[in-house]
Image 1: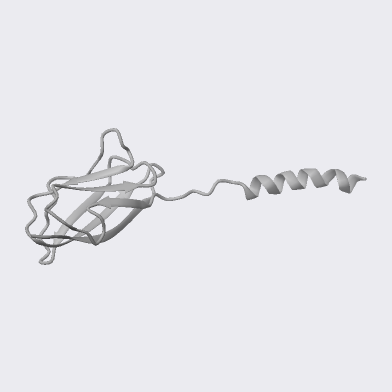
Image 2: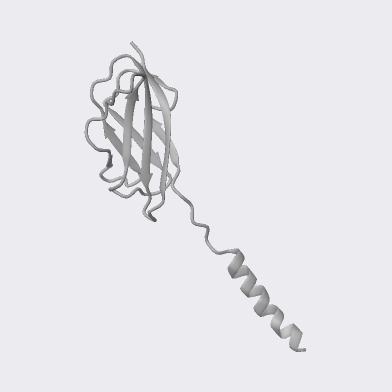
Length: 121
């Protein structure tokens, strides 16, 4: 009889351990301009993430084929949307640009990546 009284406790304990939350990291959901897009010269690059981004320790670089930078100041978390990171741009000539980004989540995990877009005539 004693063995059967332990079974419910063991089952409950295993359920708690199996259902413990997994800590996810933010991921880039979309951007404007989008990866691989051909666009008229944008004035801002916006990045939307799966969770809120800390207002510090973020970086967005917009770089042309020769290595010149076109970001106009530091990237900022959008007012009213803690999941969006915006980078203002200097005027972009026709050409291809690489966006390199790094973001810090509320749990302090850092994520980063890059993509390209093209400014068409």
